[in-house]
Image (cartoon, rainbow, N blue to C red; front, side, top):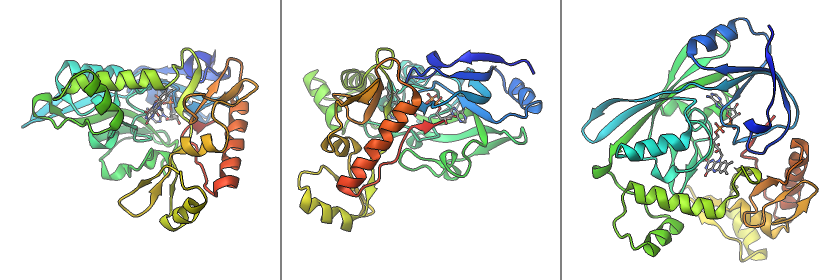
Length: 336
Ligand SMILES: Cc1cc2nc3c(=O)[nH]c(=O)nc-3n(C[C@H](O)[C@H](O)[C@H](O)COP(=O)(O)OP(=O)(O)OC[C@H]3O[C@@H](n4cnc5c(N)ncnc54)[C@H](O)[C@@H]3O)c2cc1C
């Protein structure tokens, strides 16, 4: 089949220049089913390319998600059910919710990428996670072409985690996501996060609405995170490690300043950014790549880096954090 070859530099937020040898734009579920019928290549699904590290050419059928459309499906009391096709841009969806007085996703403003990728790592920021508003999804099984519905329980959501990163990794194309949102007038606003509180206080807002929260989150994100259009990156490169309380108390004696959060199940979360910074990597540049000067957790492409260089840097960071603290960092980003 004469597929198009496409350079993926503008399709991934690291700005890595690799080639896709068979590039196909998915614009309808029917088109997706048809292309898969004739396909014997492995499949690579691409959304906004904001959570992938491409270390080599993509020798696979690359399915670029361009399934667009969203609608209000129904109302029950204060709850409004929305269905969104998976190629929609996440942040544009958030803005649409705010325009329509629908609450629930405002804390997740300005996260890059598509609606369809959001459940895969249960995106989260500023005290909210996707699972808090998730009402189910439809996905096409690549091997059979069958559409299957997944409820919340079946998705096994965890911290930056779901069944689609584990048992069902690479097996389904998520085509549509359903949300339970609230009428803004009846909604509980989540303004507990420290940085959000301070922006609202500075702006003199004492009882914020969803637009105030969204604007505060946008301001914080723009001041903290490098814009991928200026400096290639994929946001947080690593997850924050969760460690056993006994082990934490042991290393805390040696590193009394270690920032940490006690979790309800008794384990302890340590910010990966703190570990990376205190292992000496913050702002360090190696060739075309490095750890960002303001955000140690964000690895950046200074221009001509290869994915392999970024991967090598991440391996070196993992090894040095392991050596100094005995803690294993896990990549949040999907490596190809
Ligand atoms: C500056 C910046 C800030 C960020 N901040 C945050 C943040 O605050 N919180 C957070 O959680 N994340 C954050 N991220 C990460 C990223 O935005 C999210 O993980 C996002 O959901 C990725 O969406 P995407 O469409 O770009 O996915 P892609 O990078 O295109 O794909 C990610 C993975 O999902 C698979 N995939 C994509 N779409 C589908 C589909 N429809 N069906 C099946 N598999 C699919 C891909 O094959 C790949 O393995 C940030 C990234 C950047 C660059």
